[in-house]
Length: 425
Image (tube, rainbow, N blue to C red):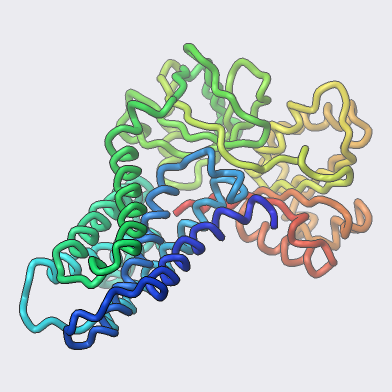
């Protein structure tokens, strides 16, 4: 098994182990009515508790875990899947657990935790809320703010489990296992919300230049004030700016400069509320806090024959790779860069210089308004068969999904198709 698959497997192994422990070390029957239902209900709820605990760990963005998921983007994808399974177990818990006729604090806390977590998970999985006459669209900062409260409802859920007359107390091994994980997750949540800003290392940079490359893309050049950010070519960072409340929220952007460059360069396209505001209001002299680098989008891990596909602003990780080529290039690379029209092409002169310097680096420029949408068949026609090649994709999600499907149909193994999922919500 690949190392990058072990993270998700570990999460669900922890949940499965909980079920096994309940079956092996089942608490003794204390004579209560519907004892079996109580045991089954608590087994389901504690499994949900463990899955949510794992999500609180992932929310802290631990860089040490990245290799076990295949990058931070895949950690967030695992985060989403785990949340969905946790919801299934929680709902099953309330369907199985015996009904309580008397109203009590423990039961009220359980309902509060369930309703709160369900609402916040649904908000985390969507950017639009149904409303009378249409939808309310959450901005990124609003979405992130609501997401931060999941830990509070998780703690309420733990308190609920401690107050109600639970049968788990009759099985010390199960209890130790569940609450060790749960309390560790609470510690991770407290660290992220209260201590991360102080303890996590961030690098202070100053905005040295803000250059608008066209009507929607701005290039930001950042100069280090003290220690430099360490990153690999193709990685991304989280950045926040001081001096403007709306720019103070940390957002992820791919680094377009070489790891060896003194300054950090970013190319940002104005497509959402935050990036549109940044395009209009970012100024030189502003201070920035950088955290990273994150991601495992690395062509050097691939084989000798490669195909790169950049769509629009998806050029950024490839720029970092190109700027990091060095004296010679070992791989044979066909680089397909697709935009709608010539005005959208970025850094063409620099890319052409790289193509002239490295004979085994070939640029294919596609204007979709004139040449049509780029397809895997177009790529094969220009670069030859692709079954044995490593494919690297970055651009709009629709383009990535379409090309991925087409490459698989042409016989390219899924493990040879590499891309990052920047839909972190």
